[in-house]
Length: 463
Image 1 (cartoon, rainbow, N blue to C red):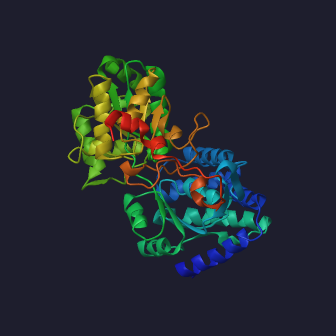
Image 2: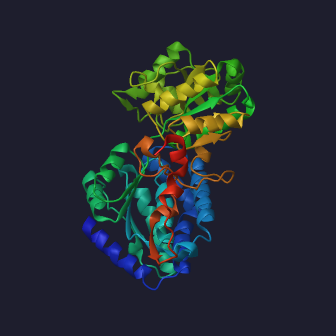
Image 3: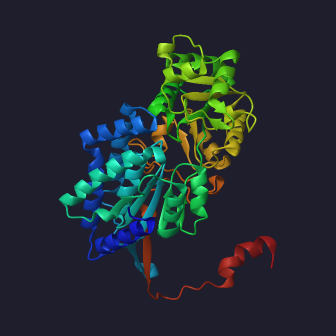
């Protein structure tokens, strides 16, 4: 069995050959080969089924949809983009910018998305001329192996070196992942915050993502029927495995009762005090989320928690009435399950305060949702909350990581800026997988006088 050092050495050799004499067409063809390894419908179904069976997380139908849409959207985003040769000429500054590969990428991928996330990283890496080595979670190892086998089969068709895409051999371990982190040229880490922090401290440049804990405000101007429908679609997609799934609803008082009725229609069940206590006891155990509940089907949650709801067959998600925020109120954090916390706000100002408090507790920098017909309120949230994304009138889990109906890059990894302890504040995308070399030439001298700079200041403050 090859050691981590052997994998990296082989990847470096393959990447050097991949880059030597390359053109844009070579990089594009490699990216398409990897993408088709998953997007071929039969393979997508097999990998989605295998992902659910091996991790116990999510559901097959939604994983098929996620694998397809996320990859198709990524291919749309990178189609026609320059990642080889001259990026742009800036004649007035005497600059020429050239796209260059980074080298060998290391990607740590989560069990919640053991197919879509690694494929996204692989396509981005190849598009920019890199090799990549994956470090899957223990539960995601076997499906990752199958995915890579299909990629290698596509590579064989177009005479590409299989060592351009590799993975840490099973069994996975923290020690192997740590060695990978220390040996590659750049890291992309999605998943636990422990892995993100280890990546940042590894000595290797790293792209990490922050924790999710999405709150969504429904104000008095919103289309309540549409809002409830979109929240239900988003919350239940893939059994809420996404970091972009709603975790808390903040409903203003003026439309609270009407919105609760709409939520009931779309399968939400607001729990009474007794059933709320049962669910909290079952879901939060010794400071951790219960693996028998996270990303599980509703019937499993009801059985494990022994919760009783009206018309259980029509129940799609559970709603926990909440008031407190912080470590003593675990329902105010990320739940990774078909469970929502519910906060009642006096007005929009109060709702905004609750959303800020929830972010300060967990999920700072990630995203906040807003259902409204007053677009000025979206700007308020963007100006005042510690968030990198304000998702307006959309199904949150589908919109945050890119949608065919918004302009965000398709991604499964959301940078959360300084608020979330991350080096980036955008969705991780192909631009993060390349270096830029700049040729710098002389231009006509452009040196201002002190007056050009300070005249306005001197007029106001004096010299």
